[in-house]
Image 1 (cartoon, one colour):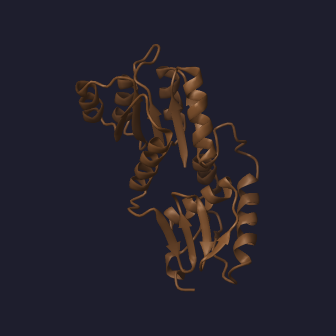
Image 2 (tube, rainbow, N blue to C red):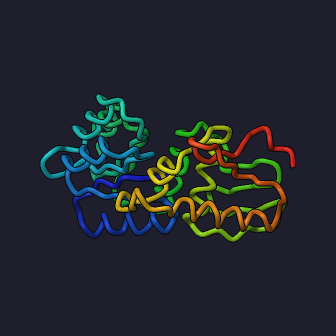
Amino acid sequence: MKILIVEDEKDMQQALCYGMRKSGYAVDAADNGQDAVELCEYNDYDLVILDLNLPGMDGLNVLKHIRDKNLPAKVLILSARCDISDKIEGLDGGASDYMTKPFHFKELEARVRVLLRRTFIQNEAALSRGGLYLDTNKKQASFKGMPIELSMREFSILEYLMMNMGRPVSAEELLEHVCDSEADPFSNQIKVYISTIRRKLAAFSDENIIKNIRGAGYVINKEDAEC
């Protein structure tokens, strides 16, 4: 999943980016409201973590822009503003959640997971089909109880395909949602990742779980759930 972190305090921004990337998310960052708005218009983010006290454009105006443009990203406000009136204004303005600083990163991480599950109409922390099982909290994959060793990026790709089970997902869409914006859109890195994931899954199952749909991308079919 792809996250935009909007935070003007440099140390805080770097810490958030490091923590979210370590948790397996693709992360972009902005330190002011105008850049945040431009990034949101250009990229398809799954979640925006938004500070309110920003130079130039205030965070609430960034939120208003996202909602006025009907952009699909969930917005989690992370701010030092702790008055109930600020929380109400943020939530009424279209924020999906509101956390105050100081905060515990583990709690932030948990709220991010909940919001992303809500984005994909996923109520449980686990994704499964046949013998394949993904624990989206622990970022662990297994097949019929046997662990599958995946890198964070490989897990993110498999997770995204399973969240969109039954729908072909293009390489461009995968690149948009699981890689940072600095990734080369003309590279074949998604193809390489898919090949590696298939090889690892083949050690546990003879089924070709990730299928190619010519001209459309990759799909994990719901009807293949029984293995």
